[in-house]
Length: 321
Figure 1: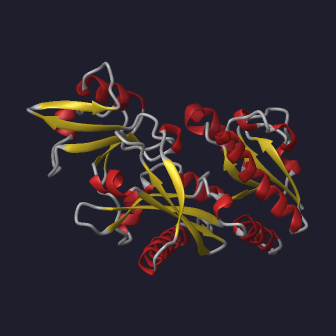
Figure 2: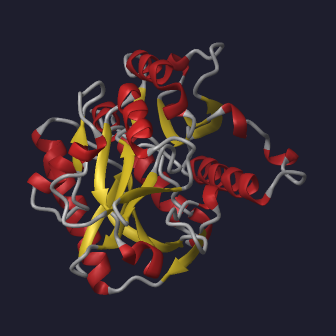
Figure 3: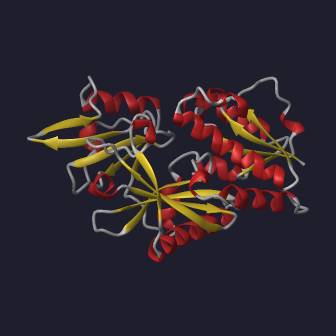
């Protein structure tokens, strides 16, 4: 069977041409190559392909595995069209319905309704006639975070704090919060959440779910003076020895998500990442549950790529796949 691991044009390098690249890009490529090699070890004909390459006949693959397609939110309309077309001609991993559901952070509301603690989130629709003063109402805190419901790498994500009756933005922006909010809401759905001091103090945990089990965890810590934990913004990532409590919370979140997807006939994910933080009361809450193209940090768990590859091979060998 032919399985293609999907990336974006920015990372379209071969394994032999990585020595001159930045450490960040080398890590990205090593992660992809680790999965390709693990798939080959399972007897699959695996390779990497750029999702936006118009010359590719996607029906030539038995399955596509989404990995480093991290430019999708910058090319949203194009990506959505491509996704709708390609799902007609081959198997997607994760399943197409799962991808569509998880691409938009509205899924957090579904998890909340299923009884999973999530970071409190209020979502406002694109073009909604809503001022920032109105959007910030209903929160017990004057320290908030705004972000798009479709995004990645903390794009268009801001911490908004009120001090002495004035709102302040971080990172800094030339526009006022009213102007910025109006501009962002004209372009996309936006969400408002309380800022959680624990993210700065203790970081964010990411627990990887591969083939139906939690395999490993990392801790993401923001750069001093910032609140964004992504390495795109100077954050650091270290292996984390998860506790039984942390594992149990991630498993509970995933089991609830799978039940939601089963109810909606979405299929079951073969990979996911549960991002979790301490909320204002000190309890665990899901900040994101990524099932499209999460970084999975294979390099911090030697057999993780193999676990996922074996799950993919088993899935494809099922009669219904």
